[in-house]
Image 1 (cartoon, rainbow, N blue to C red):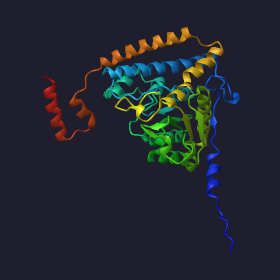
Image 2 (cartoon, rainbow, N blue to C red; image 1 turned 90 degrees about the vertical axis):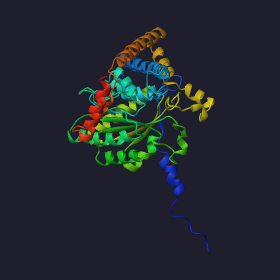
Image 3 (cartoon, rainbow, N blue to C red; image 1 turned 135 degrees about the vertical axis):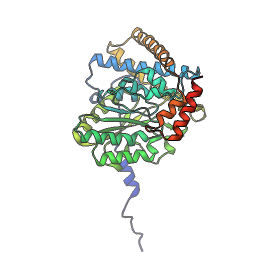
Length: 369
C-alpha cells in the first residue's frame, strides 16, 4: 500500500509565518540612505534636535555610570547603543501621549518632561522621584519585567473610551516578550482596539540569556499575530527608520485601528545593569565589535554631516552642556531631604491602623533626637 501523503505541511506553515517580517531600514551603518520611502519628512531643525537628544543620552549614560560607581546613584541600567531605539521612537510622539517606561527607559522619560534631578532620586529609591507633576503624562519606570505592558493596555483603553487622539507608548526588552504580562497586554489591547504602541527593544540578551534561547519564534515581532495586531521589525540602530515606523504606528493607533507591536533590533554596549552583571561572561568581543560598527550616533552623525547640519564643534558643545546639566541635577538631588522610617510608614497607609500609628510615634521620637 502506498504511503499516504500528509494533508498538512507544518514546515511550510512555519516558513509562511517567518517570511512576513523583513527588517525595515532607512540608513545603512555608514549613514547612507538605502530606502528613500523610510526617510521621514523632518525639518533640518528637527533632525538636529533628534541628534542632540541622542548625544545627550550617550553622555547621560556615561556620567550615570560614573555616578553609580561613586556611590551617588543607586539602581542603573545602561543605555549606550540604544539611543536610536529609545530617543528616535519617543521623538515620534506628543507630550500628551502617555509614556509607560521600563527601568532602562529613563532617557525617554526625561525627554517627556521628568526633571533629571527627579530621575536621579528615583534611581536612589527616594520617594520624591515618583511624585510627578500633574501635566507629566507618564508613570515611573516599572521594575517588574513586562508589567508596564499590562498597565499600558489599561491606560490605552481609557484613552479610547474618552475619545482621546493620543496613544500610550511602552517599552520592554526581548526578555519581557517572554513574560505572561506581554501576551495578556497585547491580546487585551488588540481585542479592544486600544490606542497603544508596544515596543520590544531586542538587544539580544535578557540579562545573560540569549534571545534565541527564549523562544522558537524567528522574530519577536511575529508574536503580534496571536493578538491580531500588526507586528513590525525595524533596524533599532537606524534613527530615521525607527522614527518613521513609530510615526506611522501612532497614526494607525489614534485612528481607531488598535495597537501596533514594534521590535527594534538594537544592542546595549554595557551590562544589563550595574548591579553585578558581567557581559564578558556571555558576550564575545567579536559580537561587541560587530554591533559597535552599527553605532546609531556614528550612523546619524555621518548622515547629518553629509547634509551640512552637524560638526565636531557642535557635538562638543552639546556634550559640555549635557555635563553641566547633569552636574546641576545631581546637586539638586543631593539637596533633597533625607528619608525617614516614619515617612515610609505614613506613605504606606492613607488611614493608619493603630499598630502603624504606634510605630510612627516610636520612630518620630527616635528621629527627633
